[in-house]
Structure formats: C-alpha cells, structure tokens
Length: 136
Image 1: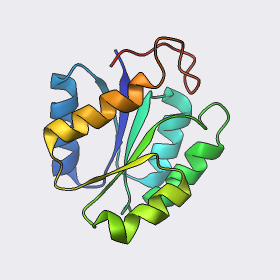
Image 2 (image 1 turned 120 degrees about the vertical axis):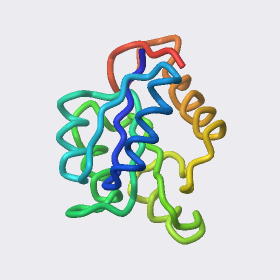
Image 3 (image 1 turned 90 degrees about the vertical axis):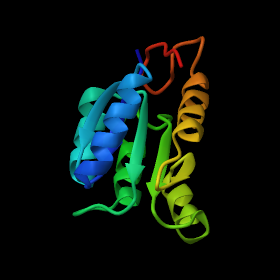
C-alpha cells in the first residue's frame, strides 16, 4: 500500500483528501503546516506528497525545497495543490521542486490518475525515494 503525505491547513480539504485517498487504497499521513510536512516526510518516508502551496509558517514551496534537500527524499514525487491558476503559481512550484500541479477544487479522477502515474514511475523496481516498491 502506497503512503501519501497530504499537506493542507484547511481541515475540510484534508478530510476530503483523506477520504478520497483511503477509498482508493492509499495510506494517508496528514500535515497542517510546512514545518510539520518536512518532519513527517523525513520520519515517515511517504511514497508521494500532495503539497498545498499556501500554508502558515513556511509555505509549500519552501517545504518542498526542504524535503528535496533531505537525504533520501530528493526523488519523492511532489504534487503542488493550489486554488490559484497554474499560470500564477505553477512556475514557482516547479522551481521549488514540485513535479506536477493540481488546481483546487480537486477533480477526483484526474488527481487519482496523476497520483497513480507518479507512483508508477517507481515500479516495478524499488522506488529510489523510499527504498520500497510501490504499487499504484
């Protein structure tokens, strides 16, 4: 079972993502701040991160930079989540190290397709980011 770290400061968004991802067969870890996201990424070694860009404390771009800099986490797939159009925030997210961008409100099927696509980059060989094999 693949483990996904969901980072969002909005409880409603986290509940929705948690429910959606668990129903799709994923294990979910939640963080409400950028700082918490970095700590959980380092300690829990998720297979993928869904990163809100607007967070209290350090924002999603800085949290992404810190996750990318952590030993063994440089290749973990990170998908930026934002209510802003990709034209407005996408370049900053990619520059920070996000692999892809999903706009809120989330469209369920496209998000699940994107997640499975990102996770499949690591199969069938063990994922470089986690040392574990993952299955979409």
